[in-house]
Length: 265
Length: 280
Image 1 (cartoon, each protein chain N blue to C red):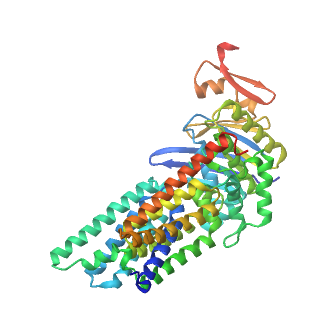
Image 2: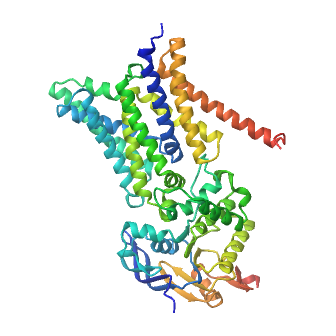
Image 3: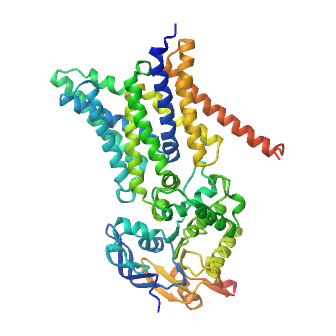
């Protein structure tokens, strides 16, 4: 059996006296897509940052791609991050910065190319390939700051994929997007699930965003895992009501899920 | 009569100060840390003040001034914003007030000890018109070191300019590269301050980069254009000053401001032109 891509044991993360995460055990297998679901402040983004090694835990063990993060020095941790694609919750605020979309995606190749070496033709080919695959090829020469929020999010995913990662961490990739762009992002993530053998950890707090190819859903609440299993088993009326309050029901249809008022069904 | 042997180092000084400040400006404006210039100036002042109190004089004061500026750059680069829970501008504000307090404390001690602080003042608030070849070589050395660093770490700095956190997450040695850049930036600013003065440097950091950002897309183009506009402001402003007998600092600042206004106008006109369909 393949070693898990992510393995967390007895993990505790604190901010002052407040406990942000308190997990006994969490695993993400190779080629698996897992959605972390929970209300704001549940510890979802903290978990992603722990896996990247930029949020040190108070105690416990974090293993990513077989490496125990607490044992890695600065250089080894930096090398490990080169094979982890990470898309943060919001693209950086750019103002008038004139970086083109192609240059932003090329950031994904920067660490891999190594220090003192410019990006090679092969790096730029991969950059262009991911822009095309995500349907953003026509934006390549535009300034990133001039794109819409949805376009920027796509470019950020292209940047993460240009790293040719073994693990993809997506932190609320549909936050603040309108319905049309939200659906396009779900389709993009679903395509990645189908076309790559990546382990994907997706964070969201809307169940409508969970792609049909998602293998497991993990419900987080106040830093603890409330449920972990297949989407249909975890996204039950009872679980959703205990998490978000009474009067809610869940609809499932062809791998997609939606929360509606209980009185409407 | 225009005496070229006297004014040539002044023109070279304007050209180099403009070009190196334009290069710095791309990062300072791009990362929205305009306070960096003021902060470094006061850190250098504090260094020079305490150097003078320890008995250093004249150009030797540049050493403690550089040490003060570099120490501030190190603090800014190595302190992790997530751990300090302060963003760069708040941290700069803190370092600025701290170094300013140190500088004024030291200046107060000059009075207590009955000593003159003229050396310190002249070192940090120079004037372009008094720039000599020795100053030019110093500025050229700092500018060359900065340009070499930007050339060497071009792709890493481009990533950091986009987002330090994203660069770190993508496996780039962001803290080390950024701290190295800040150290060279502090050294360049200190050398430029003592040669051509603060007012001119502040404007040459901001204006050429702001104009370049209006006119071009792409990191490389923005860098080149900001350097060209900075150098053109430094040299052009001096030539206008020489032709009109106006103060050179003012003409340089105003010329760089005119570049920003013209760039804004050009961008607005281009957008209107393309929106009207004429550009298709």
